[in-house]
Length: 364
Image (tube, rainbow, N blue to C red; front, side, top):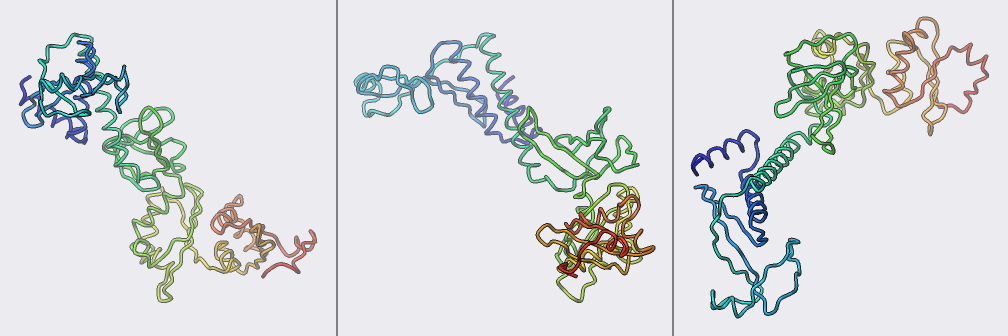
């Protein structure tokens, strides 16, 4: 390969891997220096590569000293190779102690062992640079919504092509009842980015409550511009979610903005969630009002704050409203508790009397 072909190949690698050309050049310098040292036994070699022509030159260097330092290491940890000042002046008359004197050397063909060592070093440098480049692209994507292509699967996971790398979507993180088709585009939520292993790891989910949050932000402009604020999200993936919203502008209908005309906005999000039902409730700074809202569709619910420090509340409902407040298998009250961050116990007035629950000190 001539120099022009070499530079062209190098640029192609950099473009393909999306890494800096300087990284490749620096990696090649280190690789060639170590290979030449291994071949000749000389530790004082510096390699220079012309980035325009691809020409490679080698130089031996020596540090100018007034007396030898008996194997003292330089600042890079390498054994210092020295030349006495009087000898150095014969080559460069005005040289001073502490400076370095260099002499170009003929780079001979490297042996097989040295060549393999150089190749390993260069490959490692490229891998490290590519890894850093990938991480710089994805490191701020945790907690964000991405779109990828389902490329393959095994018994436990789907693998989603995100461009420069694949994310892992565990099958346990799918929405209940949904079926994905290989080769199709899929929206995913990034739950974790880990760079501590052999290769970067991106974990994905479609069942995480954050997935609902990001879909809502994408569908509802008022959430992005701050007109409507999403306070919290509680989710039973594939079945039901509750979201609490509000606006600091009294003229804005926060719930209406999220639902959209004829329910179009919230239905679009629900369709992406495989038909998951979404309850939109109004957040209120008053925890009693907020808990009442969160327990919808139940109405006429009495709420008492039993312990403010422990966030414990009691909701009293009767008849149909009791079953609505609790929900099927306790789903409604469970989601309301997550949404409000209160432990909510739902009872009838009769149960309160039977259990001798004292409400005299409760906040209502």
